[in-house]
Length: 120
Length: 110
Image 1: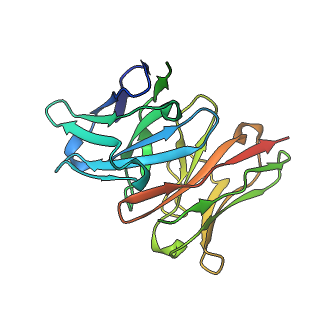
Image 2: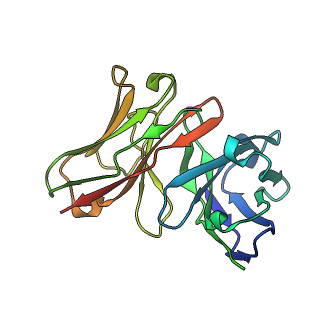
């Protein structure tokens, strides 16, 4: 069965960077897009960007260009999301989600979420 | 880039029908598929509607989706409301490879 397993919670200081991983299993990793979505406490879902693991191509939300970097390791079927220059506004749960169906929207397979807390 | 606007909250009684709207700010609503997600507190979102009006297996047929080009909006309709339907609902669409979520609607079933 399809599974997306994310790395554990992180606590970072302002100005630092964080990398969250998402390990895929149960399907051909290079055949499906992977999204990253975040949710700040009490807020809605926010789309960060998308990667196509087959070729490594990425598209980032305009708001996050220069701040987010998505990479992948096809040997381990893992996608990584690095967020730099962290501020308290980056405190959120970060989700990876496989892109399925027409247009490759996020879902129905999601990771369990990774809480990133930015605090001095 | 476009935005998707949803009402902040809606409420309805068990057994009734509720409709949540999602209005696209620019570009045609029909130009890209619309998805709807349900999210309960502390959980990841789950897809209840994809490709405008299709339901994943396991989602009851009480959930339906539609689009209306005249108002440039999409709608999620839930009939026969149950208390378990109480959750946040998000619409989502895209333009090319850029994806956008609506701000979310809190559904209260009381």
